[in-house]
Length: 318
Image 1 (cartoon, rainbow, N blue to C red):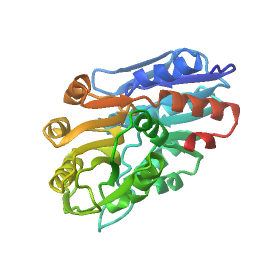
Image 2: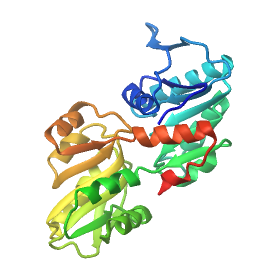
Image 3: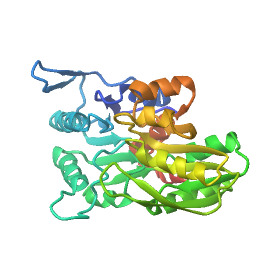
């Protein structure tokens, strides 16, 4: 794949490794810029090359520390708009604050809408993202949103590494549609978990709907934060007679002691993407082989190529 013309790709500090990988697929050099901080912690950004009339793509997932990386993105967008870029696309493999997508109890914000407004107000003319926590967040933006899915990459991995007697497990009823799509493409059975959440970041599995006795289970979700839900689901599946329990999710947030919980759980293998860089103990689990990371670099590069050339990206949704 080769792109010519005035396309330019830049990166914040959130995931420069992924940005360089995308550039490699497109045979481009990563854009020159200063991304450091003043002594008081404020983000210091300046563009190191002419971008007037250029098609700019800023690679910056708003992963933890989310506030810091979001502010970086807003400042970078503003800089490119003021430098007369023709178009600025925010490439956000992971969209932070996505879990607060509705007012589901009194006196709470809809943070996903606020973040969307900030990105649009900063001057972004397009957003490219992967596996939003809630698909309706696309409608929070008043600009085009290209919402990609990591599913083809993960499905291809499990079709290449076949698992006998496989059932796909939705960790909650809200994930049933996602799990059904995986089950169909993997020619596997489908199982649901009935989960009751009493407080944020805490979950209790109440019931397993479906037969898992003697079967290999694959829990499918869009993200894993504290690891509480996925570990409790794995425990419930093991208690119901599952032979082996694995999991896959697009965004490995893995905050706090999540990696330690996973390491001590009934989960034998985790498959994730590099939408977020692994850090701390999660990186140790990758080195041990318990976590396997699949790349979304080529997927994003293909989407960027299509956006720049004004061609369809629908083939990437399969």
